[in-house]
Length: 280
Ligand SMILES: O=C(O)CCC(=O)C(=O)O
Image (cartoon, rainbow, N blue to C red):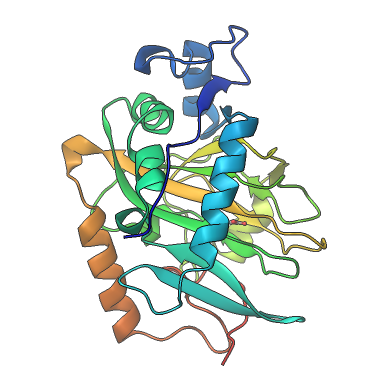
């Protein structure tokens, strides 16, 4: 196990709430207006990390990015960019990082997830998408088809760097999280449906968090800037449906061992949403 310090300090306050509460209790982690916004649109932007918390998280991300490629269970994935191979994703991290485990399984993030799920939340999976300069984007998709065993999840993007239109911020479709849309062979939303939907870019400042339902359609472009667009993505499910994190990673490893990525692409997910080029 790697050694680590205290978790980042968190002051989780929704942009939609006018009452600034630096240390919210579980009951006040999100306001009724936030919940209404999330249920109506399928997404919600919150303020999560203060400057000190952000600095701490960035140092953890630097540490994790240095872990060896073949680890004890964590996974690093690499993509080919015009500048050569680069790290694009790390996942299955909390067994090996105490601080990150605390951040993702105790405190404000779990409280917000619980409020949005309407029931105590369990961490289902976690990943970092690095989207380094020149890194690829993600095809339009819903996460739900890539998340077996359970119907309802909520995920979030904790922005480690400012996420902008130039460096490939998420684009979401509001109020389309009720059903699973038709997919193509790669598990992404069919072009006909993509063309019929309204895609809104959501720029997220470092330290803010964009929450989204597992059926909220989303996509993102490549990073056309000179700097990284890193983001931490925990996904939660209702604990009443089980603690399924171990099963998720067992299943994912088995699927990866059995299957192949689409020609020329890196496989980072159980669906073919990532547009990154293979390094081999
Ligand atoms: O990080 C991004 O740009 C998009 C990530 C995403 O949609 C995913 O990992 O499923």
